[in-house]
Image (tube, rainbow, N blue to C red; front, side, top):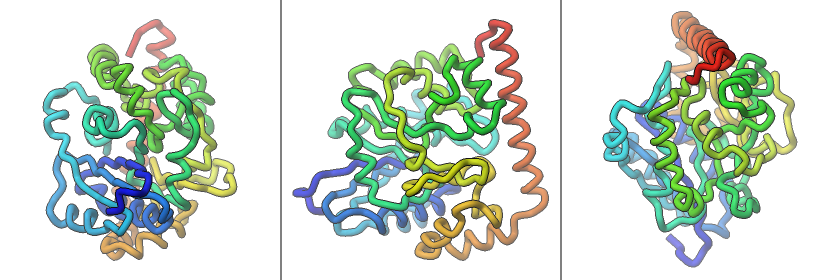
Length: 307
């Protein structure tokens, strides 16, 4: 590890189910990383088996340090307060723990596992943001699907065009500590239950008016309903736009290019080729449940009932 180079701290959160996608994301990030920086990748875990740990940490390079950090104690402290739905796990909340766990950093990047990075991530890290608490791209789903945009406006009191995606974050860790963001999160967690996009909703409420809205090229949803910016710096395979489940997904060639450079390639192809009618039906059901939750919470908000 070359400590003379400027450090770019990067945080992922993963469990065994998402380890293959994280390997693809890190492969893309590392392949496009500049030699001018030292990249410290910290993988936040609760449980991760030895095989996945060895594969992920084994991706380290001359200027890329990779380690796993166990956050079990943080989760235990919150008990059953963390709200979950469908395929979501507690890993989605780990980003709130980063400022306290890493006091040595004043800034860092949080990245979801289900992405591909098509460029040097240091360009995102170095985006000027003053003393704003974070920088993030718009959540395109809120803009293109009316039921979710209406939910953001009615339930969270946030205009759909000002609602950001929490999947890619430039985090002002120093300010997060100064404003006690984790403590604010625990406080609001005890009195409001956001189940539509969960941690993303909490972050949008807590950071309202204190963030930089990035270009969508830094967090492009892999669906055909959204315009393509040039270049697309980060592709995000979320909801049902997942090339490891379906063929014909937008930007699937980017995913498979990097997947084939990982030990998980055959497993991912097998997963896609064997994706059953029952699994497809379950994906549709989960989406319908999400729509129903958004409609229900919107109706309650319009009646003056806080969710």
